[in-house]
Image (tube, rainbow, N blue to C red; front, side, top):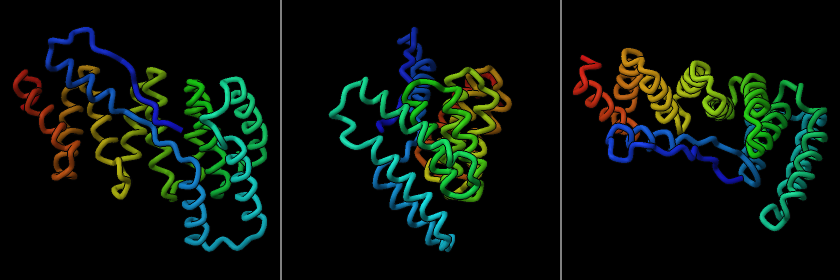
Length: 231
């Protein structure tokens, strides 16, 4: 599936701070795992965890079939056909949603992605959280925390969004850890909570000294100091 971006636009095009803030918001994206990448990752996780149980293997294979049937030739079908496939996939995934192994993680992630594509952020959030909790130590955990944060922002639940972004950032090997931390700071700044925003921006600078998001964090710290909102 294509990445989903925030289409919010600034009403004050001539205000530099507004431009920076809107640039930051536009660069908030969920990470959707589909297709061959998911299949390869699933196999890698299976090997890593030493999964030999035939029932678990069977569950993963069945979930892969459901996802394949849902996504095949996706760009060539009509919106009505997409909706029908989504309903079918959601129904077929139900038996796997309560599993606490990788099959449960994948089933919940696929459901979450479907609901996100439908802009049903409440259900998407619910399934991303279930996926994160079902695989707390898996590589998928920070992805799901990050996506849960995006859903929370869409729903206007900023405090939850900050918490979920921070949970994603706690995984230092997560490729978007710095982006997640930046987003948490961005939300605090947008709410007018400059003190907490400064703490988060400073953590970003301290932990990711050579990261591109760190450069934006540094620029926000400078701007806040110029405005007298930070020491």
